[in-house]
Length: 492
Image (tube, rainbow, N blue to C red; front, side, top):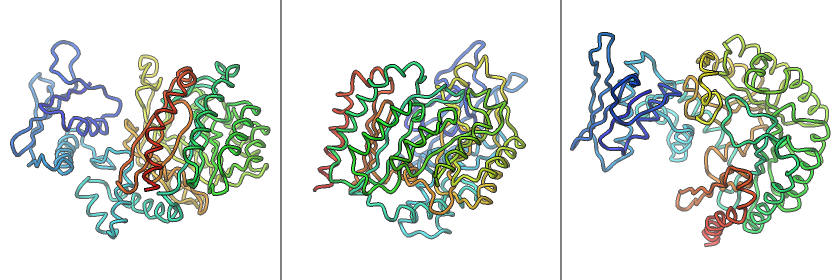
């Protein structure tokens, strides 16, 4: 537990996020406390007329109060500059206290490559971008270079996308065979909904019909069918969704059609045939790790052999763009476990891999049941991350998109690697937020971009499936206000 005691909350979120980067998984209090439950230390922020002061206060072993203090000049009319000065100041105090540096410096946002991308579009060269990211955010040379490399690749991959007149579609299936130990995504056990799946699909199809009518005349660039686990549906229900998609939307301009097959225990030859028959161009088969003991621990019901079996089946059936997701920092795994996983993945030779650093979110069982899982060792190191990057490049794959999450083990990132021509355009679009992405289904979020105003607005669907079904007309009304305005802006 850490205390955040501020006299002005304008910079609370920035201070909290940097603390979370140094101390992932901590809880926070915002008041002085006496008694047994004391914070490990407290950060005090004081707003002056022309300066902002921070004090990190804790108790030493002898009971005496230990303090580290710092202050910076502040121009409160320029929140961006003042925020970064405060974060650099706090970074210095915490780095001194913990004796460690963060690979991303003071950067706590989930899209660090947007900084490099923005600077490239402004005409800045690589040296200017490096200087800016080093001085402004204290990021490491390795992460700055990675950001620039990915930004340049993204710019090339997106050069054929018409942001203003096009859009992408996300269709969500919020069901999974089981809930993984670390998962906080919207998902419900498929067994509980199999007999009522028609109810969910009827609501989903109503939303799809509305989106197709409203977005008529705009180019559909990419389609992503995710979840949850879409292949947790029966082959019959999967066929229904595929037919509805193709009958409702104009696929003649679609550059990429991805289905998150995900869980190997949900994949069958019959389901793969449904996807092939309906023109799916990219699928993901996700082992997460190739260590069986870890799979058992985190609640995955598939085996390592099943991963290999389903991957080879998909290849034999004709899928030529297969991604595999991995998670680094899973409970009880070390460098050798990661090395063995990467060797297994290399032998399968997928077209792309997405390497995730474990993020322990509040909703995950790993956090909710600390009394049961609190002793699990969670480790993620720079050596592990470097190992996955080296293996990806040995496989002929290059990094093409990157994002971060809060409470990430090791304060690292998630990186997508692919062979040339096999990158997922949708992944780049969702990260760079340059194109409108309309989402259908429970727990999904629609993001509408207004390019002329350099602005983005979001509208969310309710997460609960029962609520989604009963309130589907309300979900359409939420979209109506935003999508109609976006279409009008395009026409104007």
